[in-house]
Amino acid sequence: MRVKSKGVGMMAQSRRYLLCVSLFSGIMAMAQVACAVSAGVVKETSEKAVQVGIASQRIHESWIEEEHRLLEEIEDLETLLEHIQWHRSKLAIYMKDLKEKIAGLRKKSEAMEAVNMKLLPILEKNLEKMQVRVDKDIPSNLTERHKSIHHARMVLNNYDMGLLDKARAVLDAVAREVDLGHQVNVLEDEIEVDGGDRRVKILQVGRIGLYAMTLDGVKAYQWDMAGDRWSAIESDISDIRDAIDMAEGVRLVGLSKLPVAQPQQLQEEASQ
Image (cartoon, rainbow, N blue to C red; front, side, top):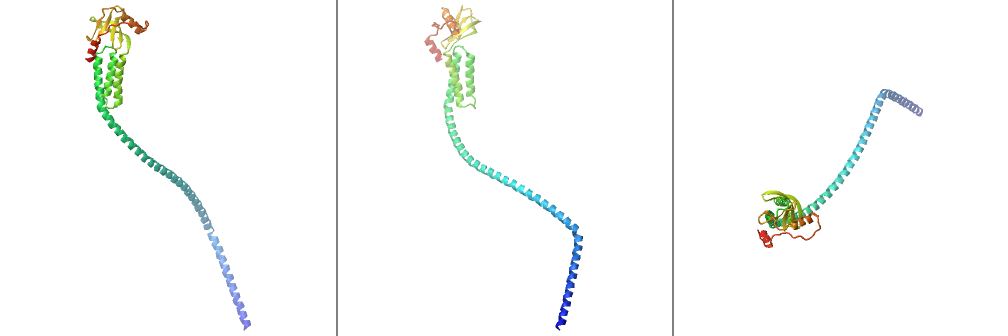
């Protein structure tokens, strides 16, 4: 029994061995057939995988570049935000300062308006008095004097001009009139005497007097403010000739007697 069982066992093992060999041979044969069939597919798949890898690498690199760009943009925006916040804080300070300045300017404007109400009428009144005085004064340098007064009047009538400019214009005109009283000038011009025009040298001695002498030195005249005309000087005219020479620098400065109006007459003319 044992011998039979042993033989049966050996036969069963042989059969299993043969079955395994057959299965292995079949599998190998099938594998060889599969390899032969799918070699082209594998190559194509590999190429596609390589292309996909390359594309993925490019996408990855572009994402890295985009990340760097976005990080730089974020940094710039943060810097801009800090500047805006600083600027807003400074604007608040500026606004406070401007409000204080505006309040101060309003107070000054109100004060200037009050001064304007008092000073402007005084300036205009004095300018009108000056105009009357010039019209009645000696006819010396009238063009420039009238021009100065006209300029002052234009400034006073200009709404855009400030009080300082208006006061300066009037004071400049006043200063010109004051300077005239300290000037000694000689000029050559024509005057109307004896029903005709004569070429003469005119001597202006401040506001004391205005004299004229013919170019030949024969006749002399004096401006008569009361009569508003030139009147001939009948007395000795050598002093007038000497005064003209001194004013022109022809001779040394010295004393000269000139005919002048009486003080009482000057006061009456000034009061007029």
